[in-house]
Image 1 (cartoon, rainbow, N blue to C red):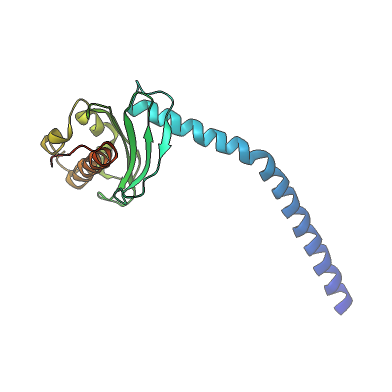
Image 2 (spheres, rainbow, N blue to C red):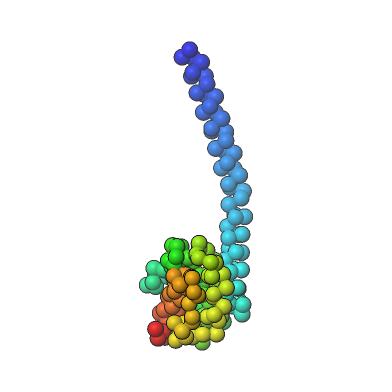
Length: 171
């Protein structure tokens, strides 16, 4: 009986080792493809909020608000910020583009489980505004927490923009 258990254990271990090796081989082939797809998705989302931007380069976010998770600068001097805030639910992720003159070129929610899906089109309200105009955007009835969080995200993007460019953002 002991011999049969050892045999079964050895067979099971051999199967596990074989499957692990196969998974490692598949991962080595797919990892660069997955990374390229992720880079392409980031570039596409950057273009959504800054259609005139080209050749984006990632910028270090040290010294910026912790809510600013990523920052990119375009060759035209504009910036795009990925900001994560809490609205009705945590993890609402907003991409916000601000051109070199300090004007919002676009804002969109790329992740979050918010009420009424108000965050889907709410970013359109910020296009063309400077930092002074953000707080004047009306909230959406029934989605107050969501829309306040969205405004907070855009304000944090402006704060980051001002720190990176040396300007001042009036709140």
